[in-house]
Image 1 (spheres, one colour):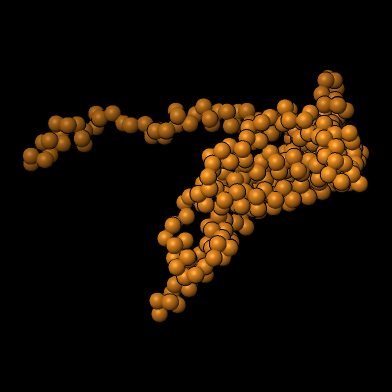
Image 2 (tube, rainbow, N blue to C red; image 1 turned 90 degrees about the vertical axis):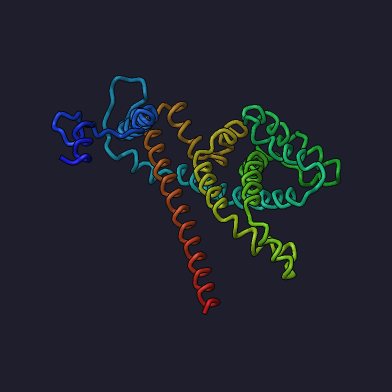
Length: 322
């Protein structure tokens, strides 16, 4: 017997009496609580909501009448639902575009080494941490017919622009957009500011050596480098627009005449105020499907755009190498 075989025999390797290891995932005990929470609570609630969406039920009565897909058919014919969808689309487009522009502009300004930059960062970010329930009475007072905005317009010679901003259909939704932009531009600014900090400074220096001005550098170098952040903000903005509830409900109560009705406020009205729990559950499932679809589409669009730019850059380098 060789020395190697003696060592293997002494250590128990190769013997039939050795204990067998159980094939278990080493990290399972660590992820088990999150797994139980996700599967046992979140997905169970989604499945239960899907079951309730097939019922005609007020949420309290023991009698649950099964109606199958009737609630979904009613949603397809519901004009308030489609109006809420239109409000969501318009709300997302306007708020996302304005917040993106303001966030990039503020981030560029803060990177230009201005004085008191820390103070400006705090001022821009403060609205993000303020609860909408605290600010809602303030905005209701500002945009009221006898509020501070109309008072200011009257004292600067623009009294002809004064109007009941949250009391008429034509201006109620723009007011909600303005409040949301004021609230969330700080978050957009912080993300863009962090993304700009990761840009290779040699690229900016090379652009300046080549004679590129500030605007050209922003358009050709800085903005393309922010594509990943922009896609992430677009996904968050789309999902946030679908879930919008607090500002339109606290400021205008989804009115007047459903002028600021969103899916979140409509679900609340149907489920809590009118006790149409089955219909509200169906609206919740539709909201979930739309949110997932929008997130997937935006993510795919971002990947395809990034892949196309990477491919074009690779082909350009190949041609230059030749």
